[in-house]
Amino acid sequence: MAEAKFVQGNLFRHIVVMSLTSSVGLMAVFIVDLINMAYISWLGRAELAAAIGYAGAVLFFTTSFGIGMSIAVSALVSRALGQRDPALARGKATTGMVLGLVFGVPFSALVWVMLSPMVRLLGAEGLTHDLAVDYLRIVTLGQPLLMLGMIGAAILRSHGDARAAMMATVWGAAITVVLDPLLIFGLGLDLTGAALAGLVSRAVILFMAVRPILRRHGGFDRPTLSGVIADMGPVFAIGIPAILTQVATPVGQAFVTRVASGFGEAAVAGMAIAGRLTPVAFGVIFALAGAIGPIIGQNLGAGRMDRVRRAFRDALIFTALVIALVSGLLFLLRAPIADLFRAEGLTRDIVYLFCGPLALMWFFNGVIFAGNAVCNNLGRPFWSTVVNWGRHTIGTMPFAVWFGQLWGAQGVLIGQAVGGVIFAALAVVFARMAMARPNVALNGPVPAPAPVSQPEAEPAAPGERRA
Image (cartoon, rainbow, N blue to C red; front, side, top):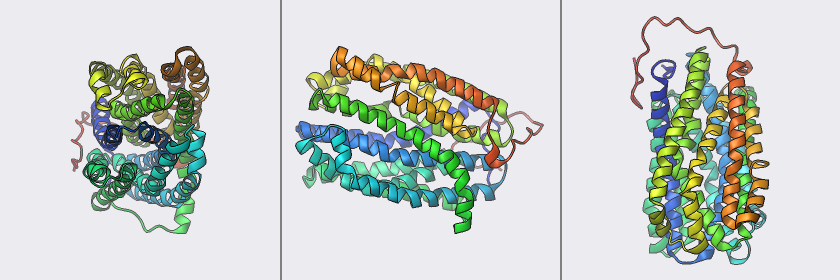
């Protein structure tokens, strides 16, 4: 029997547990990318490190499709669980996986065909362009597997099974850690070895995400054409704006990479290191949006808008605490981090800048993530789209160019960070508006909150089942 795990208990603790467990899985994947970057840096060829930087921008774009779909499926499944309707939750989960496959494969195929012009658009030329394209031609083949794995993990989080969602990506990362040195150094495959390891990792993530759904959470329905068509509207009503919201980030990052390329391969390598460090250092903040989404969805389904508002407030407090802690650690470890990648000159300067004051600016990105999660799960996903596109266009592009002209490659990073302040404020405004007027037309009206006849119970530990 499906349970609404988040409509009782201490909300701040729910947020901490869900965010930390989700971030472990998320960071496991990106730690492997970071290790890849270190391995490639040790080969001593600047064009290899730069190629990884360009490839990362393209992969960020393709992964955004999966993130958007997982947000939509999580919102609908968690809302159904909040309404105590396991059949509806299972149906939404089934539709989400089917649509992820039906649309994920053609999307990845289109990206595969367009790899060369995409990499060239980012500023890569000559040998660096060829290396990046060769790497991407292998990794992109596994992107549909990663998309389905992300949707599966979102379904697990909707059920409150944060541990299983975490372990799916942990196992994928573990496989990569084993294969990377063997293929990169043992067989001398360089970037090709890193790409093959990434391909296997994506298949493992999908398998480990689907297995607990089948074993513990009701599995999936047998998909039918009529059922998929009937559910397509609700999924895409949230999914399309969520995908557009996520795509904004790699578009902004691609522009920043293009501007940085004007300062040489050392600048692109520095940006690539900062790009790999970001999701590892701030994995908890990246995970926050996916973590509070099911909490908001279940409480919306149960009619507990008071807990929805409290969850948003607690998420902002949690963000501030995490940013303060992580920024301090990055500053203290900035020299060893730069040494790990053998960063010198301009590359080292960029790493030091990222590990210094710019880390504190990530608080505003965390506010945007939390605000977007509220809007997505309260039926206002288009508002998230407005915030993200604004943040990564007018909140990034002119500032990156302007500050780049003033302070060179470091100024590009500073300009990218400045726009977050303005759009974090807008995200808070939109989140408050969404909480005041949630749009629940896709799943019927919000039920009246049930009378509470007993004190709120403390939440179960991750993975624990309640009677």
